[in-house]
Image 1 (cartoon, helix red, strand yellow):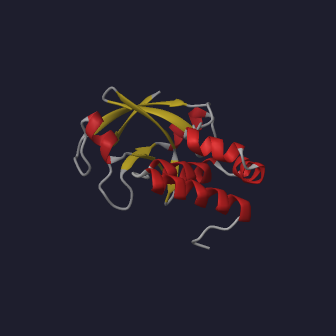
Image 2 (tube, rainbow, N blue to C red):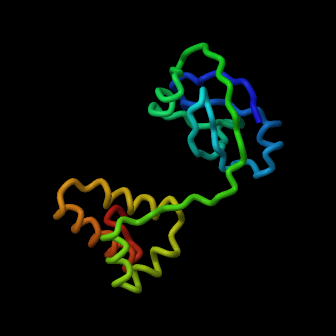
Length: 152
């Protein structure tokens, strides 16, 4: 499915507006997961609703890869297809081993939403030193066991 839109200016959200009829035609509800292709560059996302408008996020990396710029009065062609596959995450091996060794933490992790699992994975993967990585894994396990983060 194709339609034309304009690259949004930087505020309040960078992205592409999706006509309501396109969202309806996809048949995946108001916020369907989609695969977007702009100028031959594809990425996965989800339709967002902001101030009554349907929008697709367009990160700096995706803008560069697609050869479009924020704020440009450029018409872009976007191909949107319903992405029926649920999002998947792969835990780093050391985090997976630590979870497997702690049934309470593993059970709590299994109940988390995609977003919360991803937050824990990114925290572990973002560590540069082995000691930091080990400390972050311990923090994830502790948070999962108690159900409280240090930010609570």
